[in-house]
Length: 123
Image (spheres, rainbow, N blue to C red):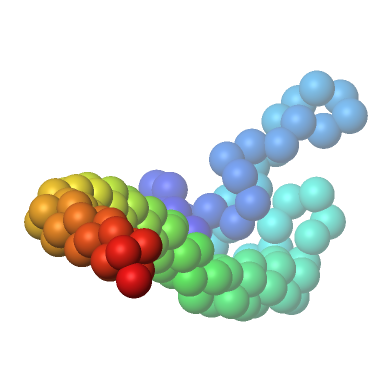
């Protein structure tokens, strides 16, 4: 609650009543607030507001942490997507290298199999 001119603000700076005339809501501790509200009511409202504030602060911190966690998870997901793309590219390169290195061996195998067929025909 803010202090206004040495007085504590209770509900707002001013409130307009039915006649259009504004009445102050500020009061010093121990006095009665205008518009028929008693200090007990103001004290109860003050306690409720304090309780509400105390209970919502951890929620706000949790929400802040959730936002940080989401940002962190998005960064991590982007990292793993990039890793996936890098590994796919490396796999394709290795696959091509393997096929190129196996080609002479496959050619030789085909040649030997052809020779075996020819020898079987001779027999």
